[in-house]
Length: 173
Image 1 (cartoon, rainbow, N blue to C red):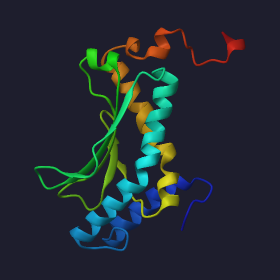
Image 2 (cartoon, helix red, strand yellow; image 1 turned 45 degrees about the vertical axis):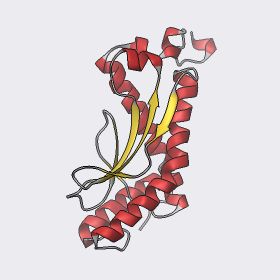
Image 3 (spheres, rainbow, N blue to C red; image 1 turned 180 degrees about the vertical axis):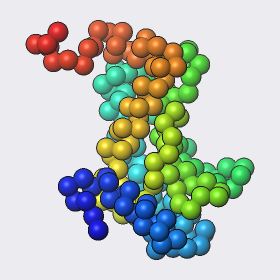
Image 4 (cartoon, helix red, strand yellow; image 1 turned 90 degrees about the horizontal axis):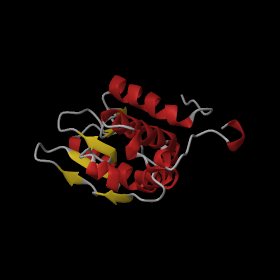
């Protein structure tokens, strides 16, 4: 069953089915699920970069730097791939960068997405179309992450705000 009118919600349905059926992408073993994770991270890469690039261009006025870690294994044997957006005001405020973080915890049934300050979102991506459907989720995580970073410090860490941007069309100022 899919929700074709809202494609990114299909991931939630895949998530619930995984939990129900005890599988992830048709796999039961940890090594097979880890291979799914590696594939998902590769498929998500252009969309994660796009979401962070949009935030950088529009709100950070192009002043940020996007980095990606590639898939890595943590000390606890979990897997992760992080995409980060750094900028001067954020670094000076000593707060984490806007982060899109895909991870497959060592004790998890399947992988998840989160931000530096935004917690878990199911990661159930097995092909390019499913990765593309996650773009709204990646955008939402990035935007929520930036919001939470502003909450940790203040609005001055966002260059567009300091440059007078209001988010309103010019005729509504």
